[in-house]
Image 1 (spheres, helix red, strand yellow):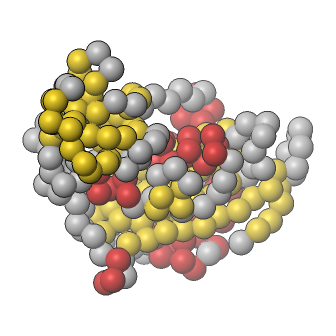
Image 2: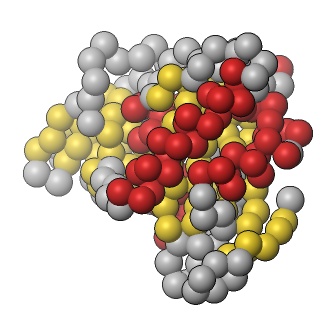
Length: 233
């Protein structure tokens, strides 16, 4: 769906799209979740993996994605790969995100409005997930920095790749994305007017969600970028 919304400074084009892993052929299950909460890092380019610092070089390369950090020595980070191997890698960055109070409030309002819509159908409220929020933040940052809009990143590949590598235990997961809207109600209204996006919001099997809203930069087509994730856990 495409539309235009007027703003005080410039026209903001709006768009939305979704991705969902509920088809039988796309159903995926993540590895067992870590026993404790650990910091996450992201790899932005193909990285050669090592069993130890300077030792035991592996031939397999870790694809760009999000990984949990288990230890650090200088520029080296210890992570567990999607193959459940503990290795040391280079070229990783800590995940950080700063946003204004305006955007934090917008995110809180979107969660409230989504649960309000679910309440109309006697569906349970979705709980805000910090683990999913890590991934929605990286997704939104990636769309802004790489100047694209959609479910497939030129760096990380399909959005669901993050679930394979971050040890998030789930049965089903889905993604809604939208751009250009300037209010929480605007985002939610657009998603609810789209049958496929509404199916994510009203899916009775989902029990967790996360939302990240970030402002676009001067080079970007859109004024705002929102990434909404759902999961059954």
